Length: 232
Image (cartoon, rainbow, N blue to C red; front, side, top):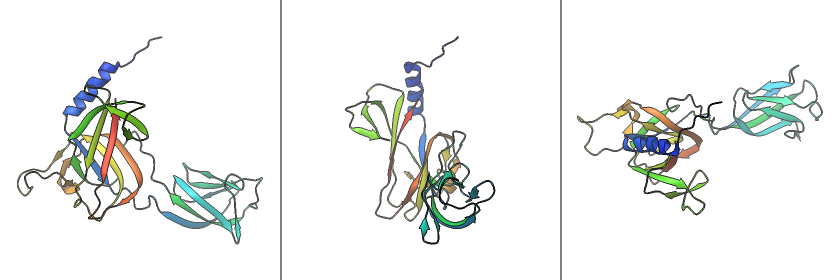
C-alpha cells in the first residue's frame, strides 16, 4: 500500500506562494431568509412527516392549541430536507395538524462553491502573516490559539478591516477570501481606492475560503474586521 503525504515544507511553500499573490476579502448579503424566523401549519401525512420548505433549521416550536410539543420526544427534525417527523411514541396524534415556528440558519459552505451567494463588494488583503497553533498563543481565530511565525508555515492568517463608509447600511451574511481576480482601475476610479463594490469587480478570482454567518447590520459607525487562517 502506498503512503503519499504532502510534507510540511511543501505546505509552507504553497502558503508562501499564496501570501505573495493578490488576495481579496469579499463580503455579501447571502439570502434574506437566512437567520429569520418563519411560521407555518401542516398535517402529518402517512409517512409521519411535514415538509416546512427550508433546510438548516433550529429553534423549532411545535404547538397544537395550548399544547407545546417536545423536540425528540414528540417530534424530530430532518435538517437536510427541512421536515418535521412525528415520533409515534410521543403525544402527537396520527394525522394531527400542528402549528410551528423555526429559525432558518445560514447554510453550511459547500466545498464546490466558487463564489459567494450574493457578493456586495471586496477589499484587497494586505495583512497576511504566517502563524502556528500554540497553546500560549495570543491570537485566537475560530477558537484556536496561534502565535506569529517569522518563517513560512502552512498556516496563513489574513485580516481586513472594512472602511466605515463601505456599504454602511447593508446586512452582511457571508464572507470569502479570493485568490487573484481583478478590479476596475483608472478612469473614474480614484487613486488609492481600497473598497470595490460588485460593479467594479471585473473577475472574481479563485475562492479559497468562505463563511456564512448570522447577519451583521452595518452602520456608519461600525467597522467590521474579518480574520481567517488559511490552512494548507
